[in-house]
Image (cartoon, rainbow, N blue to C red):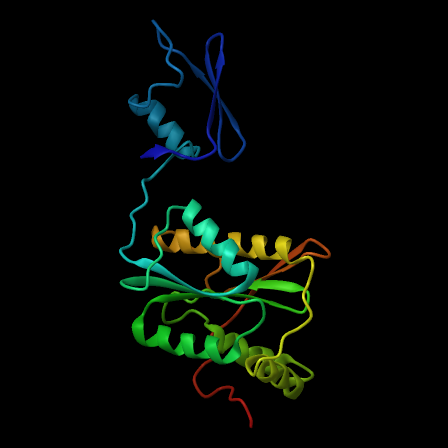
Length: 241
C-alpha cells in the first residue's frame, strides 16, 4: 500500500487532521514523544482505517508494453504532453495501447486501426473534433467492448442524414478540412486529459471510465457528455452502398 494522491496531514495540538482524497476528515491522535509530519503508517489499526477511507491505496501493477501515439494537430500535442507528465512511455515497439488522434474524423484510418486492434489485441483509444465538439473514444480494450467500427455503424443508423454524414467523412478523408475553431485549446486539452486518464488506468490494471464510451466536450457551453456505445452484433447492421 502507498499514500493516495491528494491526502493532506494537517498538524493539530493533539495529532493530525487528515483530509482524504474523498474530501472527508479524520482526526488522528499523536503517540507520545516527538511527533513526525504524518501519522505512523505501521500501526495495523490505523492502516486498516486509512485503507478503508482511501488514504492508502494499493500500489498498481503496471502492464508491460508502451503507448503508440499517432496523429496531428492540437489534440496530438496535448496528449503527448500529458502522457509524458503521467510517466507513460511512448514507442512503436512492444505496444500495449495505441492512441490515434486528429483535428477531425479520419474515418478510413480509424476503421483500419480498429481492424488491426482486433488482430493484435492492443487496446485502441481515439480522439478527434467534429463540428465544434471534441470527442474521446470509445476506448476499445478487447473483445466485448465497443470499437470505432461499432460507433460508426450506430451513428449512421441513428442519423437522419446517413448519406450526408458518410459523404462528409469521405470528403475529410480526401483532403478536405473544416474551418479552424479558435476555441480548440480548451476542447483539445479536456479530451486529452480524458484519454490519458483512461490509458493510465488500463495500463495499471484499473477500470478505464472511457471503455466502450464516447465522451464529448463542447467548449462553447462547457458541457461534457458521456454516451455508452454498445458493440454491434455481427451481421445486425451493415452499411449500404
